[in-house]
Length: 211
Image (tube, rainbow, N blue to C red; front, side):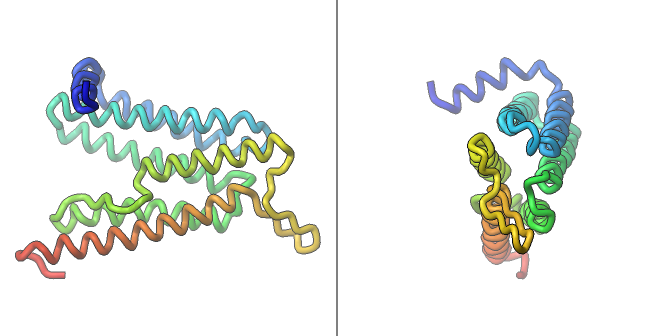
């Protein structure tokens, strides 16, 4: 059985569920995920809980989109799904930003970069050329990279090394999450640049529009 057949069969079996219920569930899961970030530095097992919740959210979102398609895409379902999805992203990345093991400045720039990545993606719809999804840091890409960062932090904490750099003289402390935040910022900014180029190419290929 091909993956496409599996998707269609899965969607047909799950379409009895109202997709709005799943959107709310994803929102609650993301809120809990963001909350766990605040205390993960004291209870390292919470990092594993966060990873499980992030994977669960991906499954919920994937299922929700399949159900919406199987039911015959209703505008209201799509609107509620996207609103809940954006709030979910904010809950997660605000939790990452306010984590005790994330530098506040790096956390803030990570949050801004993630938001801008989505904004640039939706600019394609505003320009009438479709949503732009180019680049490595799509929602799934960001989530998978975040999971890798959290697993690295968890195993380092387990061995008593939560910090990558610990400067006693200057008081500057950098954790593995900070290193991950740097990678996230670089990759999301690269994604923004790639999406702007893709947007420009689509607009220029449409003879009815000017760049």
